Image (tube, rainbow, N blue to C red; front, side, top):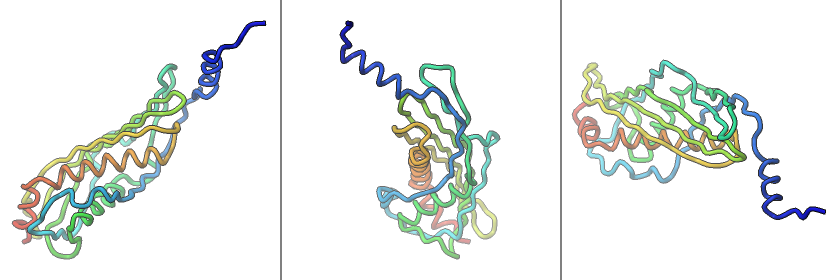
Length: 197
């Protein structure tokens, strides 16, 4: 009788748990604020924005792709809700956490969603990645653009394959980073004061 070693048992266990099919997934984009964003923009002399408007400027509306690490398997990832609404919710939340008043006074913040991509690398668990690139403009009531800048952010995660929660956490982390990079520039802060009319 052949002796079964622990290494053989481990290999059998891993093979049994490895993902053998890769299916398309649709991710509901749901923003959840992270307390760590508070205070990230530093001090603001002026802190009013009348509204945040977001346009989805991407030509490719898919979110990304799921790929298997050892097999020629892949599937598309799509959004099950409106990306522009998700970006608006995230940008507004980060600004509010940093003392920006989102009411009737102040300039408009016009945001273009330029990049929104995910990756999922699958074995028996998955590594997740996301990238978000935003272009923002502060516009006075007269229509004059007082500031234009960009923000890029990335997020990563690890866990169960095809997990909606893992996708959402990764995407929200990337959106937070892009928003903070866009809004923490001194030019943005100065424009909040200079762009009121």
